[in-house]
Image 1 (cartoon, helix red, strand yellow):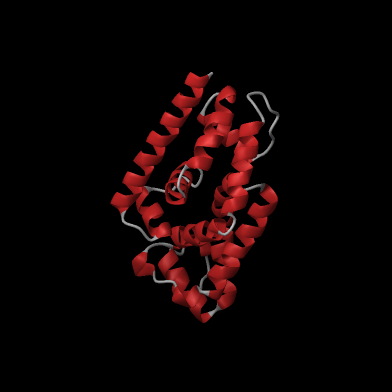
Image 2 (cartoon, helix red, strand yellow):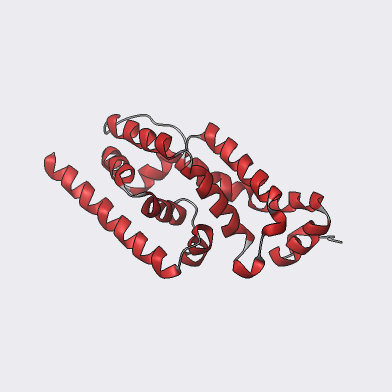
Length: 189
């Protein structure tokens, strides 16, 4: 039996929650904030709450299928969240396009506004939003898992079920495309 949840590693936790599903609350408590912040950085906060809740519901339903030899719980949860976000891609693109139309001095509240502002100056926000909307989904997922989820290359690879080398190449392509797009936008004035 688990006496101190904070001291139990993920592999041991998986073993215990398979026998006692109530222990899955430890997984939720341990990773909810990280998953929520990642999803909130990708989508608006109301949808982030829903997607985060759905992430843990899917994880709970599939808890017996989790294989610790393929990676940790954290990247597994981020992978589930990323797949759920993929269902909302059209809305995500519309959201970035709307941000791009706001112009250089909008009073945009929320986590996404703070993230974009920290990435570049306030006047660059519409350029960045258009550049993010134009990225292919796989490149955008890798970039945002690293930037917003703060996952390592290994964790991103686990979350998306791709090779670590693919993470690096997608991230490099995404960065190059973002810079090229912003430079092109700035040149237009």
